[in-house]
Length: 92
Image (cartoon, rainbow, N blue to C red; front, side, top):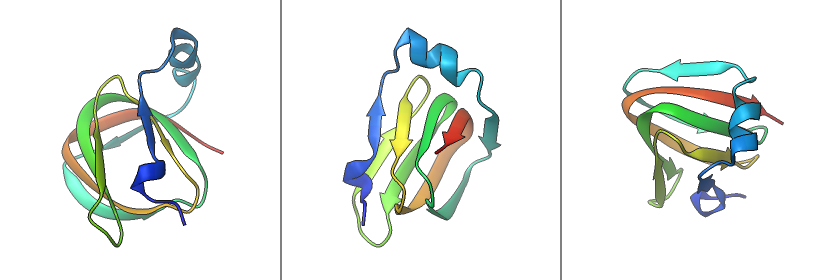
């Protein structure tokens, strides 16, 4: 089963940014919620700050504006949104 250590957080290339801008946008206010990934998600964070933690577990990863984030299929985690989020996203 994937863990937070399998989440990729990096700066996107210009080509990736251009592609991401064609994807839908998702927004979320400050909140905490559990999420189980049934597909791989790639997203480009436009606004906000998030910490995602393993469930169960204590490992975490944080990201914010400008980050390209890839969540693996099968990851069970808890999202802690500390600043309202706006992101482009794609599921595969």
